[in-house]
Length: 263
Image 1 (cartoon, rainbow, N blue to C red):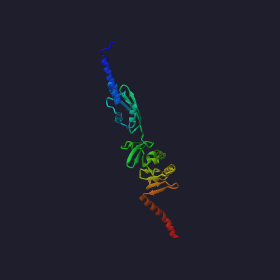
Image 2: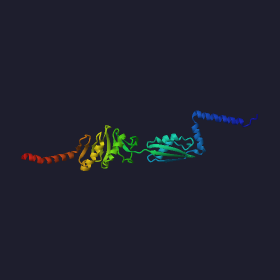
Image 3: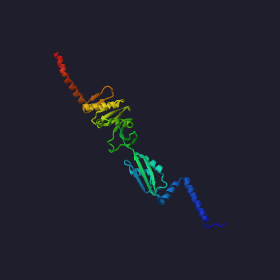
Image 4: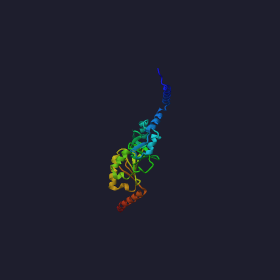
């Protein structure tokens, strides 16, 4: 049997290569080796295209991908990359796609802020479902409804939608205050507080809107309008309003008193 002269070096090289591959596999270095080899072969990621983001910066997305300039497209785990991008505060969902030989396409769907929730001294943007998005730190979304108090975030959609059925009233609301996690107060822009009942808020709002249209009640010297009693509306006047009311009643009573003295 003739053995070629290069057989011994070939077998030695094969044994060394097998030993190295075995060592890399056992030591957990195989993925890194694969990344390096494919990157040197022209598959290093050099282009990342991001779409769908307006609140999330490109830099935030790239940081989640942890690219180092030699990251191989072949060894990139798109599922892990998608989960990392989806973990960003504003991201609702994300898709990551490889485009060979050297590009990644990322498409994100961002959350939609519905209201600003004030809880103690913190302001947080929340979704319509009440899920928290991110702290409110700028005027970018300052036109959103402000809801205040424990439980207000999860109930915001209901009260805002109810009040919106009365546009003239809705335009005057500064904040929606959740009281005892049971009912709502409306704080108006002029400082008046409207106390809505726990049950029958829709009927109370309709009555308030009609009363305001007919009398201009909310534009008068009023501190609060209490609608928690089913059969009546209680109005708390400002000190000046109370003084004027007292003087008006006295003027109204003068003819009555004069008639009494004549009789």
